[in-house]
Image (cartoon, rainbow over all chains, first blue to last red; front, side, top):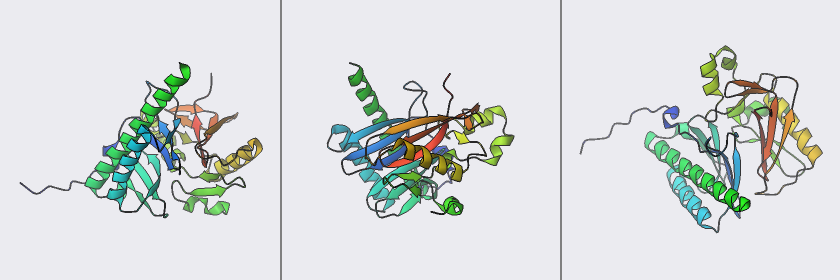
Amino acid sequence: MSDSIDLPINHDDRLYDPPLIDHLNREAEGFSVEFVPTDTLSTDETCFVSIILDSPDGRMMLACLNRAEEICHMGSIQRIIHSGGGNYRIIAANGQAINLEDCANADAVELSDRIHQMAEMAQTAFRVLARAKSA
Amino acid sequence: MEQSNLHTIADGGTLSRLESGLEVIRRIKHEFLPALLEMAPTDLSAATDKRSGSKFSPKWSVEAVTNLITKKVGNAKWKLRPGERREMQCVFDELTGWVRGRQVHTIRIVCDGRYIHAYPVEDCS
């Protein structure tokens, strides 16, 4: 197998369409997630969902976050903040922080994917909750 | 935190800690960029869309936004309640920023129960 080539990737190359995490905060009980919704859900700038840790959605979010923690090597991730475009700031409980654009390409790509997965989960949880409220 | 030092605060960092324990945080993606004033409409639309984030006008500096949040949240007596979202909208006569390339006069203040920030939103019709 040939060696891989580490091509420089601009952080906007990792630019996903919504849903996007805007601000994720991990509390003792679960996750407070402000996310940028798809226009099909809402034309609003952001929506909010609170996800209890001890729930199917909470466990899926935690699995994604745990993988992100393995990549970042900073210990427990406390918050994820969208800095615009394809860039995020990841803040650990111990105060350490990194910007996605400063990560090695392979790490940045997987982190982007994990963060997008969490945004998808948050939007799905929001839809389910909204449907339950309107029923 | 001294107002003159607010620009040294990293994205997501605390600009002001309120008496209630709530924290006003910096959100760089919504801050004014001088380049916005020179952009063609399509570029301005992209620079202020959902992926890039709406942008404040020059008048709404980090300091001005922090002061607005502190005043409004203080008046509303929001409390530290993790996981409990609150929001309010403030409408002004002057331009507050751009959303998807359109000029707006409204600022939304949002709180997730612990962290507070603000950004321009479309005016209600």
